Amino acid sequence: MLLKPLEVRNGVSPSRVYLPEGTYSTVLDFLELRFSRGTRLGWEKRMLQGRVFDQRGIPIAPDSPYTPRCLIFYYRELQEESLIPFMEKVIYEDERIVVADKPHFLPVTPIGPYIQETLLVRLRNRLGHEHLSAVHRLDLETAGLVLFTKQVGLRNTYAALFREQLVKKIYQAIAPYRPSLSLPITRSSRIERADRFMQMQEVLGQANAHTLIRILDQHEDLARYQLEPRTGKKHQLRLHMSALGVPIFNDQIYPVLQEYIEPNLRTYNHPLQLLAQELHFTDPITSQRQFFQSSYTLDFPVTR
Image (cartoon, rainbow, N blue to C red):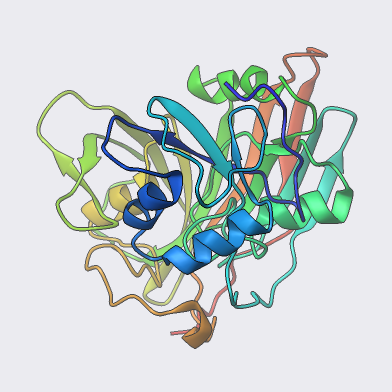
């Protein structure tokens, strides 16, 4: 337990690492082996600059002894981070929540090569709310609405709405038009992690993912679909559409996983045609019915 809360720095909260049982002499020895992408000199520099802390909030020195079954805290940093050339929009804010419109390609929270170029960190810095916290997630490739809480302790209250399926979520997607596909249809299946990195898969067993799919309109060999997920499994909409033979246009993961492109080499010309368009829920604090709609649209023709 962190006895002395650490500050948010440049919109970034400290990360934490558990120290398991081991024969390491120092915390530095452990970190060198635990994080293969880092270097011993890099961690030593952080420690000398006072950027690694124990669970009391006290800076850890390079020669600090290793103490198992404890937590340590540090701030993630990147030597270089590619700028994402699209801006988020704030469409609603009150004393408790923020609803933001996320552009394609922008991660919601820090991950891998992204820290400052994430929706959460951008909004913390822009709005000045260091306790801002994402209530749910969207894939990096998906555009649309994301709900945040502003106060410590409120996140779980709003997250419970998603866990208990009390939030109506409406998405739009552009995908191939398949005349033989009878719509509307509810796709129900069991989704679990696949062996291949990044991918999920449908497997036999009791369904844990349900999506209502309707067609809205058609343009040549493409159609615009309305997707209403009743559950929130990772990649659920992308996998369900692919399983029906109509994979979402510009999907780099389904049905075939494409080669990863480093952020600094991306052209941003072919966004995934998936949009989190609407959120409907009853506010758990005020009991008021809330409805939010994205300002983004998916339009024909689609860049191929």
